[in-house]
Image (cartoon, rainbow, N blue to C red; front, top):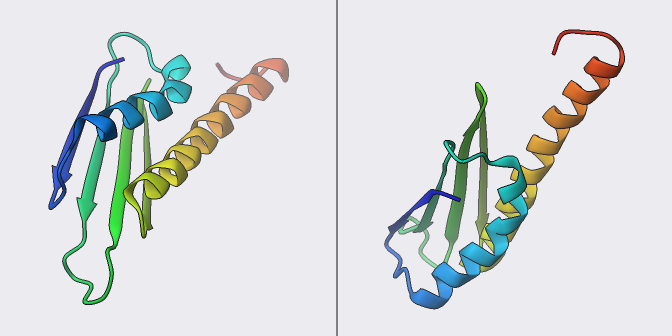
Length: 107
């Protein structure tokens, strides 16, 4: 499953990479060999108090572009919520195509 990870103002450690691999396996069934996705992780420097992390997932599948962005107090929780949003978007389009096929519409 080809992907790219970009980290800004954040150390991309080996445990974090393993966590990303583990959590992105759910999206693997939607991604074919020639398609890839991009994960952008960053720590916002605009906030004065506390740590604010941002996770963004961009995915292009068969002329469809999916994007999920989430901001949270922890990079792992932000990544989990962004992954769930991405899964819901993909599943919604998939179900729409299935119901169109069953109704005799365009593929």
